[in-house]
Length: 179
Image 1 (cartoon, rainbow, N blue to C red):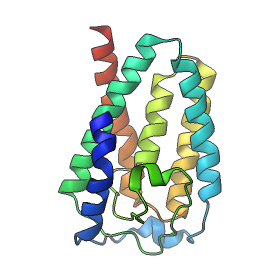
Image 2: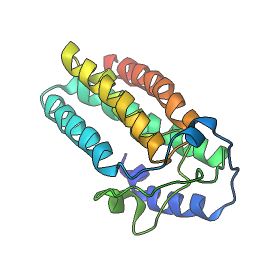
Image 3: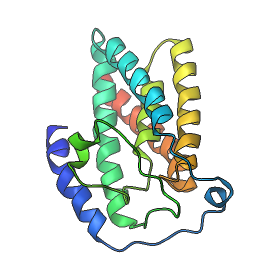
């Protein structure tokens, strides 16, 4: 995970410089672009906080989540590398106070397929053990995905694909945690 975080700024700088494909997304055409960054992070950060709180005394949960997230990050870097996309039309830049950690001072708009925000929150929901927490996080994931579309930060395919990747890597992480 440390190597991934170390390499991320260079990776995002690289993908931002290359030409990509602009996708005609009829869902985004129907949604007016709005800045809903505040709502995105009001969902993402409390859910992450809950997750870290639950993970602190649960080794199996921690190992499952860490392996799942490592695989998710590596796969996301691979798909972004193999599927160069241009930013969606009407993209409204997200205001994330912590983005400088991952992106540096650069404005990144081409980290598209698949949605990291949606995939991460879905992975959190899959890892949690209490039914009400899972339900709350999955509802939050659906709302987050819609908000990302309203902000035109991702194409529809990016947010729809994310939970499938999350499930696969959660299962892989869970399998490794049993070993």
